[in-house]
Image (cartoon, rainbow, N blue to C red; front, side, top):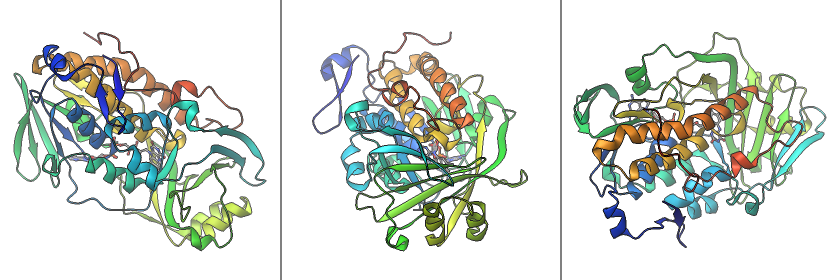
Length: 407
Ligand SMILES: Cc1cc2nc3c(=O)[nH]c(=O)nc-3n(C[C@H](O)[C@H](O)[C@H](O)COP(=O)(O)OP(=O)(O)OC[C@H]3O[C@@H](n4cnc5c(N)ncnc54)[C@H](O)[C@@H]3O)c2cc1C
């Protein structure tokens, strides 16, 4: 079934609604519980509800905060976000860089520039505050479907449904469960065991968002710039259309022992950070000098998992394909997952859930495994322009899906 977007940017089916009923599209027949209200989980809730699925989202946090982090949304994920109906909101709040600019860390020499005009990949390239994206997605879901303070503890498979138990004592059921609970996924551990290796290669991301006014007269230009050193890099961009907010994110060596569970609360030492980039270009040093404080984050990755589902439980986003942030595709691929998962579930009832999950995995895994590998190598766009059409040109709403997945 072809899926189109209407003038308001919302998803519209190429088929009239009554015909979809005939084809067996679940009109509130299927109930899906999503574990985790991160970017992937919220995107999945939004795409599934477009197809009439009864979605409930369970999130361990008791509230959402606005911790300083930017995020790049590439055209491949923007197409999905357009279908969800949040594109206009994001455009209003984001900086739209004209290109990916790659420069040598100390000399500033430009090694490669990829122009990102909207016409090229069929959607804009936006840089924005992560919390803006998160709240736009949360706003796409009725509040009563979002259950904060629910940390998944256990899952039980029953004939035709899954029962969940949360740390707060709540027990509930759904036809199927989507584990979108991030790189330390409990859902993944329950369905696959905890032996999948988590790689900490001894690198950390320092990141901060701060007022651009602190930069004085320094103008960061109209691009998103990645400054490449021998064993470290830093990416810098504005996160607002007025260019009044600036963000940077690093990848820098750190003793292997340092590792936190994923956390938005660990602060970095600005003096250590400034020293680590002491021989970088004056513009980089000026940004770090101006920054009042930052957070620090271990960069973690895993090999592709042997499988993404077990019966009526499936994984999505970082839970099944965590990757380094070097291609800015972690959230983007989670958002793509959301559209493909919804398309696979769109034409099944409760009895067809397992087959739909296999089909979703069969379609998604080759692509996400490829991105994981390239992202891990951290050479994307460093010196030459790679083929980018397969990545940014991808349209999860309309890409053909094979009929079946694994049996
Ligand atoms: C430094 C850095 C920069 C990045 N920059 C970009 C970028 O520019 N562009 C991009 O596309 N990607 C980027 N990423 C990747 C991106 O942040 C992740 O890939 C994305 O957030 C994954 O979304 P997710 O929903 O799968 O997981 P998460 O965002 O981690 O969300 C998981 C959610 O599940 C909840 N949860 C966990 N366990 C439980 C439980 N037991 N019960 C209930 N809830 C639970 C968590 O509280 C959380 O809300 C970056 C990552 C890093 C580290």
